[in-house]
Image (cartoon, rainbow, N blue to C red; front, side, top):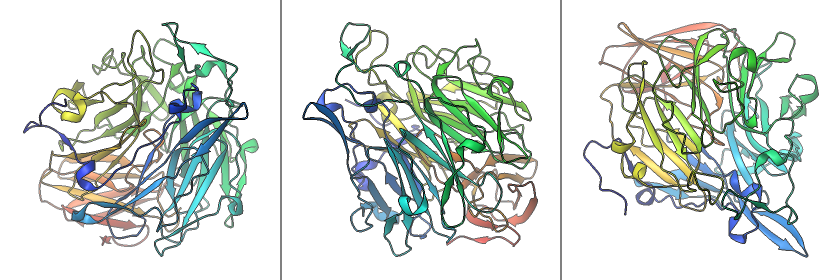
Length: 535
C-alpha cells in the first residue's frame, strides 16, 4: 500500500485522474531474457497543436517472440496524448495517424525538421529511425526514408541541434550495442538464475550524425570525428565551453563518456578524459544512463549531472570554467546515497521554487534478480541547499517516492501552466506516472525562444534572467534526461512582482537583452525583435 499524502509533499501522482493510461511493453513477458528488454522507453513534452499547452508523446516497445526457431522483434503502437487544459488529456494517436507499430522504440526528440514553425518528432529504435512530420492539421506523416534518415544500428536516442550554425537543425543519434536476438547465449546472475546478459558481452556501435541539407539529411558521421564505437545511452547538446558552438556530451554503459567540443572546421574534438567527464572520480568506467545540464551552484557555468549503475555514485560535475569539470558528488553530500540503485531518467531543475536547481532520479534495475539490488526501486529527490550541498528529501516528496518502480525515461514539463515543474515518468510494463508539483511559486516567468538568424528552436542558447540582485541561468539543451524530451520552455522562479530582464546568448555568440518583462507570464523571445506574450 502506498503511504498517505501529507500536506507538505512536493508531488502528487495524477496520471489516472488526467486520463493518461499508457504502459511501455519491454518484451520480457516472453521469457527470452534479451538485452533489448532492459533499455526502456521515453516521453516527449511537445505542444504539437500550438495551443500553448504541452501535450505528451510516449514511445512504445514491443514483443520478442520465437518464430520457426528464431527470435523475432516486433513493435507496438506509441501514444500521443493531447492536453485539454483543465479537462485532462485524451489519447489521439489514431486520429493523429501516429500509431505505427513496426519499430521497437526507445528514445525520441522534438525538432522543427522542416522549419515550418510546428514541432516534429524524431524517434529512435532497434534497427531504425522514424521522422514524424507535423502537417499542422492535427496529423503526422512518417518521412524518414524521404529525408534520408536511415540507420540499421541499435538506435537509442536522438538529439537535435544546429551543430554547423547554418540555421538548419541537425540530428545526433546515440547508438548502443552490436547485439542481435539469440536463444544460444544464456547468462546466469549472481544467484545462479537465468537473467539478461550484460552489455559488456557486446561491442559498442558508432553514433551517427545527420547533417541537414535543407531538403533532407546526409549521414556525415565519417567526417566529424566521432569515436569508432561506444555503448551510448544518454546525451546533452549544449554550448559547454561558452564559445558559441554547440558541443555534445554522451554518457555510455561501461564505457568512457565523451565530451565532443565543436571545432572550427566542422569536426568534433573528443575531450572527455581531459575535461573530467570520461570516468568516475576514481578513474573507472561507469554504467551511465541519464544526464542533465544546469547551474547547480549559481556561478553561471553549465554543470553536468548523470546517473549510474548499482554500486556507483551518481555524478555531479561542477564546471570549473570553459570545458573543465570536477566530480563533486561526495562534496555535495551525494556520495553513497544512490549506490543501491540504478538511475535512469533524471532532472536538474528547481522543483521547490527557491531558485536553486534540485535533482530527481527515476530508479529501476535491468537485472531481474540480484542479491545486492532489487529490480523494483524507489525514485529519489534531492533538494539543492544553496549550491553547497544536496539533501535527500525523498521521504517528504510524496507517495510515489515511497513506492518501488522500474523507472526509465522521464520528462519535466509544466503541463498545467502554473509556473512550476511537473514530472512524467515511464516504467517497464507498468503505467506511466504523472507527478503534479504542489510547491506553487508565487512569482515566476516562462521563456520560449525563437531563432531567426539561428535555428528556430534556439537549442544551444543560454538565457540569464535578472530581477534586482538575483540572477538565474538556464541553457536550451538538446537531449537530456533518459530517452526523453522535456518541455522546451524555460522556467524561472522569481522573488517579487518587479520587472525582469532576460539576456539571451544565442548560438554563434550574439547577445540580446529583453527588458521590462512582467512576472507570471509566458514570453516568446524572437531573435532580433521585441518580446511578446505567447498565446
